[in-house]
Length: 135
Image (cartoon, rainbow, N blue to C red):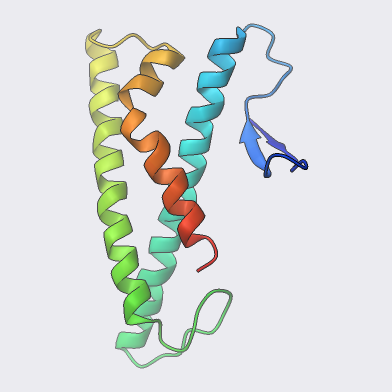
């Protein structure tokens, strides 16, 4: 996985290394889309963790100064983080089910099959991160 710099038409993103010549273009495209979902998950999980920490510190009267944080954390931000955490829990459950299905031989471990199994999150997680990132 490599970081692809932003261009005039596309933002900075992660992608499968172009040096992996064993992948066909459709497989590479599927994996690139899965990497984007994984990146969004990681960033959303980080947001939830930061907001939970800010809320815990605010509950004991400590101030939480730092990037993207206010004094004591915002109730609205914590509520948003709670909703995001619910979506992330659903994603984690889908990943666990997919892993079990692959191990049982129900779903093939092919990029297109993985992408299909996680299709409901391929729009939700990156879109959610795009909305939350400026917050």
